[in-house]
Length: 201
Image (cartoon, rainbow, N blue to C red; front, side):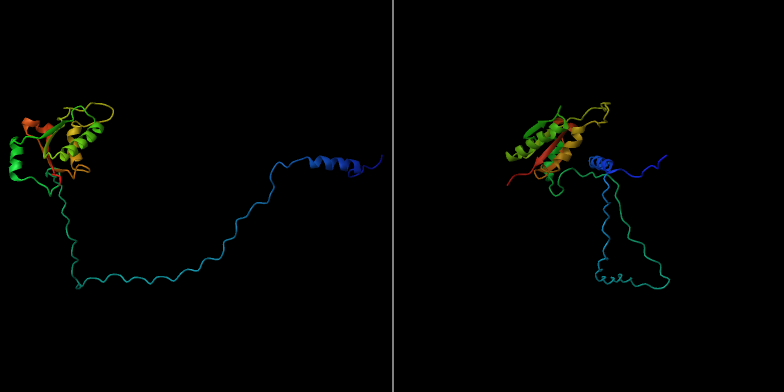
């Protein structure tokens, strides 16, 4: 029995090399990229000198500290009428409005409009009436429903009545409006507002 030779003969070795050239590695064995080492820390700038604390007020030993001044908080609701406070009506005009003897020069009825429809309509009306030189107009909102609709989104009654005074005292209408007051019963009462307009110069 002869000894087994180790290794391949030249013909088998050539065949093996041709086969090995056609094989592609399964994984990329490129060496991992190492992050660069951090450099030396930058030299810190000169430190700012510490600021001196404010001086203490003069006091005597054994003296009790004074309490801070009390802050008054007024929780009462604001009862002032909407509109710029600096622009108020004279006594005669206020009396005519209270008695219902002042005749509005124009009116707009917002019944049946949604808030999204009523606000631009009110803006066009007020600015248009001011441009025509009108001074007193009537805005009818209605008193609103007596109860909520019961829908999935809660909605308070009288949405127009609540929002119209706010719209009249905010831009762009705030510059045109002098005062907003609730109308007399003969002109709608709680469901309408007198709006006094500023005269254009």
